[in-house]
Amino acid sequence: IHSMMFLLLIIAGLGVVTLLVILFAPQIRKYAAGGVCKSTTRLDGKTVLITGANTGIGKETALDLAMRGARVIMACRDVEKGEEAAASIRASYPEARVEVRELDLADTCSIRAFAQKFLREVNQLHILINNAGVMMCPYTKTVDGFEMHIGVNHLGHFLLTSLLIGLLKRSAPARIVVVSSLAHNFGWIRFHDLHSQGSYNSGLAYCQSKLANVLFTRELASRLKGTNVTVNSVHPGTVNSDLTRHSTLMTILFTIFSVFLKTPREGAQTSIYCAIAEELHSISGKHFSDCAPAFVAPQGRSAETARRLWDVSCELLGIEWD
Ligand SMILES: NC(=O)c1ccc[n+]([C@@H]2O[C@H](COP(=O)([O-])OP(=O)(O)OC[C@H]3O[C@@H](n4cnc5c(N)ncnc54)[C@H](OP(=O)(O)O)[C@@H]3O)[C@@H](O)[C@H]2O)c1
Image 1 (tube, rainbow, N blue to C red):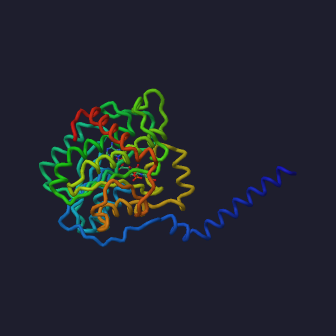
Image 2: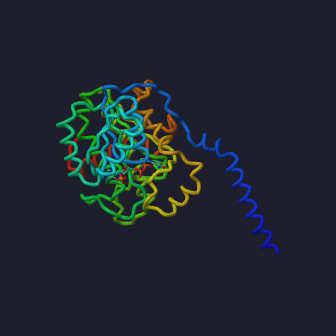
Image 3: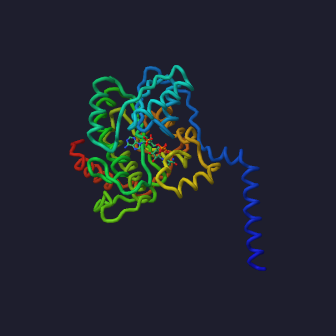
């Protein structure tokens, strides 16, 4: 009798919660949507580069910046998927100046080939958005032998930025936006085993890479002082995108709780804000969420760790960048 009552209570409770969610869905959606970029800045004559722009947050960022008049270069590892995204952007906004270029951040040869062609063919770059990312994938390595999360999310973008920094400086004022995550709070840089060869946890590997994004932003900002090129990092919010593709559990949870999540368009707002907001013209090395300054975990504020990660990244990539 008792267990029957208990079961009925649970069912009734779930029913009430479901009913409340349905009743208050519009209010919940409005709250979940978070901050909106209210800037009316136009980007006519400006060139923007966005990595991973064929889907999710990157694609919505590309659409928004194209609607402001920018020439938007969508750097995608799968050109076919990129062209489909570009076509859907043109369908929403026929005047959009969007182009697709091939870039696989899991392969330094692809990054170098991309940059070489880019520098030959594009003579200005005003906004670089390091957006592409992988989350919770099974243990895999990039072509160069880096663990996939740190390899794509951090090292790939580190190399890309180093190759384009001269052009950004020549195009100043210019901005770099690094799409990190709240997940940086749960990460630490495992210098003794950066590639998780000793032990691997896909969630922690993601958190480490997102902390690396925050530390990279911090160190790069200090090195860019006086250049009129700024760099800030972003937490886009919890966004219903393809990012959960490697985790069945996360995909199920994201589907069930989708009403509480941001849409990719809502998730793009803080990237757009950091790329264009007038009031941020001289702000650099900061972290934003919901179009406002956001908390950075203590391990993301360590100048020493940031400098060490910078040196280790240069060493792994075989580059000098000072
Ligand atoms: N969604 C969230 O809740 C959330 C929360 C915090 C932070 N973020 C961050 O937001 C960024 C965008 O994520 P999203 O939610 O829009 O996810 P998404 O829909 O999965 O988009 C990720 C993009 O990155 C690209 N990408 C992956 N590996 C790549 C590689 N090796 N070379 C080039 N591009 C590659 C993907 O290309 P393919 O389609 O070809 O795979 C895709 O275009 C990521 O950095 C993520 O960490 C997202």
